[in-house]
Amino acid sequence: MIFLSAAASTPLWEYIRVKKGARMSGMIGIAFWAVPILLFAFATSFEM
Image 1: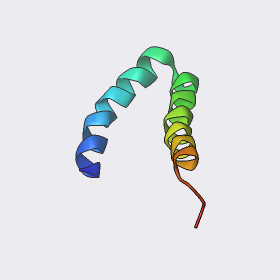
Image 2 (image 1 turned 60 degrees about the vertical axis):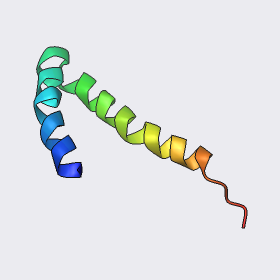
Image 3 (image 1 turned 30 degrees about the vertical axis):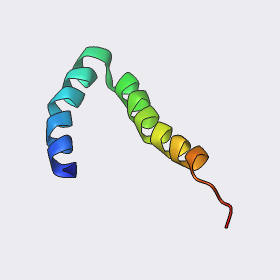
């Protein structure tokens, strides 16, 4: 599943990089990396 999503996202990522530039695609990549981590951090309960 991860391989399929990675294979599908690669052409899309190249399209974004060409259209928006490397700096913008880097910022989008950081956002896509940070948002799920933040959502997971706030969704989990640390109570035992």
